[in-house]
Image 1 (spheres, rainbow, N blue to C red):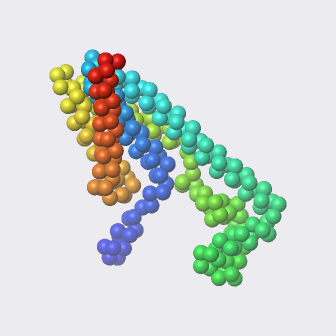
Image 2: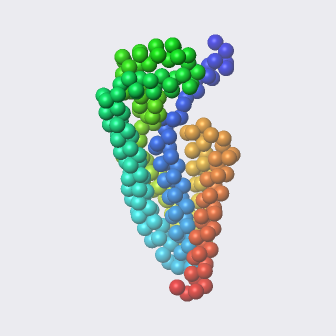
Length: 234
């Protein structure tokens, strides 16, 4: 067996990781940016005494918000999938011939001859008609199914982990806290981009740059708002 064949066998599809990876990337990035932005905003407004408190409050509130928000949004997707499943069950009971023809048409459009498509659909219907229609008609796969609890937990943990990075930076320095927060946040964004790219098998430079640039922009805007608040004396 050649090197290319070995590498091909070792390749792994990432679709089964899509649900929790999206939640984890969103959570870690939001934790880094939200917490750092909150702390930098306070510092820019000359409210430095509240820096640590702002960081802790941001992590606590943000992680709970992310968990609940992610759960609710993914649960809605889960409800849609269940509804589609119920509809497909009824359609198979009420019009099995029509559903048979519909699946045949799908396979014909994918390149099968009419005769071969008929044989395939006949075999599929004998084995598990519902599974065949959910998969090939609606694109429902078990490994990509919406999992709200998993997404909520992943998001909360990732947000907390991301939020701790700038907070640790502030705790390590009592003199120049803002610089430490910015440096730790920058390293955190780079690390988040690297981990995300590795898990998703995406290009490293592009993924890291995208996450870093978005985070830096968020922190800069919040710092600017904090600076304006400090000028107005609010």
